[in-house]
Length: 356
Ligand code: SF4
Ligand code: SF4
Picture 1 (tube, rainbow, N blue to C red):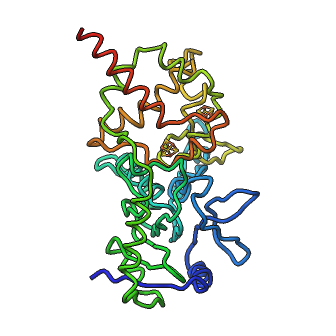
Picture 2: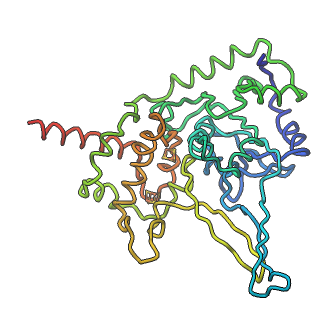
Picture 3: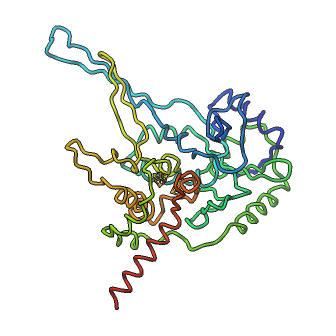
């Protein structure tokens, strides 16, 4: 049975700090003028006012992680033979991710389909996923750049979460979403929510109803794909893009990475780091050829992946959760909502023209 609990505002930080004694607690904290997910300690300034500047994805897919360590040695008595010793470095820490917004938590479901897709399992991601309890925090004040409701989500949704916190008068109602969320909460010194559950539901309902509407952005796979060769369209859309990559780095659903071996003498490590498809180097081949050598091709790929190719491969699920970070932080104010709407309009206009 799943049981809702309650915690008062002034008990939250002490409880999180007590958790941090036995596992890593990641939470949105103020750092250098920004709000970022970082390990919580007694000096942390917890910030639960709105969306963090960066997504929570680094909790499960770190910006940089060592996948394995290796060591070369000469075969004993056989100098022509080189032996290689490899040691896998799997994540070994339990973690509690607190304060991810529902869009961030839903972003993990985008990763799950890719990194935990049946026969293809990324053991590093899956191990971290298994060892991390995701506790989402329902939104009470969505920004005007938030559009989770147009991409199949909502400000109180539970996709990708184990636990949902909902702010209510004086504290938070805490609802388990998964069995492991319930098992985790059952071990915590928390009181039952008793009569507060209805209040939490009402908060979520009111916030969901307060969000601006707009056409759903799903279902545009065909339209976006039909524009694949429309250089005029993509060139126009990408004209002001600076190729800075902020949109992709901050996005909770962008999951591309690069791998490099860093060698020091006979020892080395294999490192995985985030990569970014908005960068010229992303598809630069050893020969010097680059299949996406222009901003237009890179923009087409970014939008196409989120709204066409990924949903084609994954039962219509979009690779955008509507967090709006790419809108907020783009230095030239590109708006992904407008690009998809323009693509759809243009494809439909072309179709009508062809039918005339
Ligand atoms: S954040 Fe804006 S300028 Fe930077 S790569 Fe993305 S779309 Fe281009
Ligand atoms: S594409 Fe933009 S709005 Fe969509 S999930 Fe990524 S950062 Fe958020």
